[in-house]
Structures are given as C-alpha cells and as structure tokens.
Image (cartoon, rainbow, N blue to C red; front, side):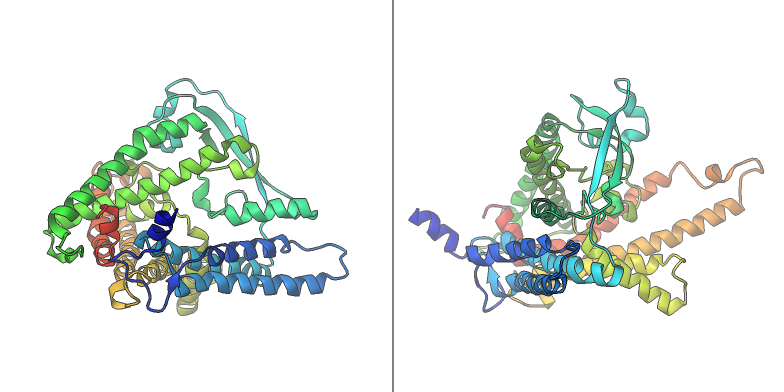
Length: 458
C-alpha cells in the first residue's frame, strides 16, 4: 500500500505543470461534479412552490460554486504521476465549467431552454443478410467496425418528453443522466452529429466486444508500437528527456502524427465501447444508450469538413456550439449585415475551430509549465483546419458552378455534371494531407510536453 501511495504521489520527471499547482486530492476531484449534480436536481422548475424564488437563488449559488470549482481544477491542481491525466484534468475543468454556465445561465436565461428528455424507440425491421453492405447503411456502426454477428436492424425514432421531472426521484435520475451525457444524447441538447439516420443497427454487448478485438485493439497496439519505436530510436535522450520534434525527418514527423491520431481515435472508441458494455444491463434505461461514436468509415470521408462532422467523436460539440459556433455566426451577421435567416457558414466554421483551439491549447498550457508559446501547437492545428474547411468550400462551390456552366451536353442533369470520377480521390488526398501536415503542430506540442514519452512507456 505504501508503495502504491508513493507511486501516485511521485511526480514524473518530465511533467511540467503550471507553477504553484499542487497534487490533485480526492476531495478536489469529487466536489465539482457533486456540486454540479446537486444544482441540476434543482434546475427543473417546482410548480406551485411558494419558495420558488428562494430555490432559484440557492440553485444559482450552487451552480456558481460548481462552475468555479471546475475552472479552478486545472489552475490549482495537477496529477503528479501522469502528464496525460494532467492534460485531461484541464479538459475536464474547462468543459465542466462551461457546461455549468450553459445549463444554468446561458440556456435558461438567454433561450428559455431547460433540456428535456428524448426517448429513442427502436422498431425491428426486416433486412436480408448481407443487404446492408450495398445500401445507404454503409455508414452504420457495423460496417464501420467490420462486425458481422448478431446485428439487429432497427428503425429509430425519437420523442421528447412533454414536461420536466417533478418528483425528487425523477429529478435525481434526470440530473444524473444529463451530467453523464457529454454529447447530450437522450436530451434536447443532442447535436445533429449523434444521430444521422433513422435506419440504423442496434449493437449488442458481443458486437462491441467483437469491435474491440477486431478493430480497436489492433489499431491501438500498432499506433503505440510506432510511437514507441520513433521515440526510442529518434527522440529519447540520455537523462530521460525528449529531443525536439523538429529533429525528426519529415516522413517520420508525418508517421508519428498519424500514429498519435490513430491512438486518439481508438482510445476514445475503446472507452466508449467499454462503458456501453458495462451499462448494457441497464437497458432500456437512458444510461445504457450509446449511439455510435464515429458515424462514417475513414475511407468514405472526402473532405476536411466531413472528417470533423462525421469521422471524429465530437464529444465537446455542445461546448463548441455555444461558445464558438453561435458567437461566430453572430459576428459574421454583424459584419456582413446578414439576417438571422441567412446562413453564416464562415463564422460558424471559424467560431467552432477557434473555440476548439482555445480549449486544447489551454490543456497543453497546463503541461508545459504555463508557457503560452509552447502551448500554441493545438491552436495552430485547429486554426489551420478551420481555414482549410472554408477554402475547400469555396473551391467546391466554384467548381460546381464551372461544371454546370460547361456541361458535356444539353441532356446531362445537374447531379451528373457536378461529379467526376476523380473527386473522391482528390478529396481523400486533400483531407489526409491537411490533417497530417497541420497535425505536426499538435505532435510537436505533445513531444515537448512529455506526452509522447509517457505513451511510449519511457
């Protein structure tokens, strides 16, 4: 026991936390989510309650305390035995604090909205064996993860509860479900990326195990092997420190970046599937509902935008929507004079990526000794992706107009004249090149912070 305690309290030599922070304590870790949970219980209105105003004030005080505790986490504490967990602590603190402000102040007071439960109903539908391969279901969970056994074809519909919970028991359940629903799944906070189609498949626990064994673990293992190989061969320095990322040849920079991306995708998938398996016995309770984390196969993506819309997890989508997309759209409309009914795509895209850049750069800031300059790699990566999305949309629209203007013949319809056989190839080369080239900024920061060394087991 003493040895375990010593391991948990000993600092890694390459951990560079914000100066003045102290090791995270159990009380400091538990208080923010617990206070947030107690405040959520009081969030739905109390009908015909004479002390409604007093309850509202008490709830707001609890929410402010919870938000400040979340924001305080990465500024006051670090995890001494792990660079990665210290990085995650910053994400949890920033995400949790922003979530509290959204739930208790932004949504209720600016939009008059308190999240309501959404119940998903799945009706079995007939599907002949193998037919799913050749239909619009190619983006399903099963095709994505190479699964074959025990799949159940369903048509999924959703209904929203008319009211909000009133009894203490229902409030306690509602609050727990909402606190655990990062993507808003099961509530009217759900973003569009969670459910793209009503025609889907219900994965069983065995399907998820199959997915882990045949898809996740092989890719995860290969990614870690590449990371360790490059670190030990080219980045490891005597004394346990890491050499600069820029000392690698360009091909090795790209390979390390790809391995880090593969690790992140499969690590998220593994965690998602494990929680889904553990909570599967609770079905049909909402806590057992785990919609697909990734909704499109990597090789079906043909643009940077499609990658971030369908190929990535988007666990922080609500945060980026509230603090990035909406402000970005508002700014574009103010600058251009667009009405509220007109699309503000540039502001939407850039706002989302700017907010993501801030969140991830702040997390990096907490593991590079509080040095702003060393934490800008993430910001450069997401800024580059935002610019790439805007640029590709401009090129796409220009090419469509050009092709429609120069149709091969008068009988060629608009759909056919706007597509070319090579579009998919060009699109795939484009988005992979953008992510790998820009991703080097991300990888550079992770090498500098010691994250790559920790992942390599050094």
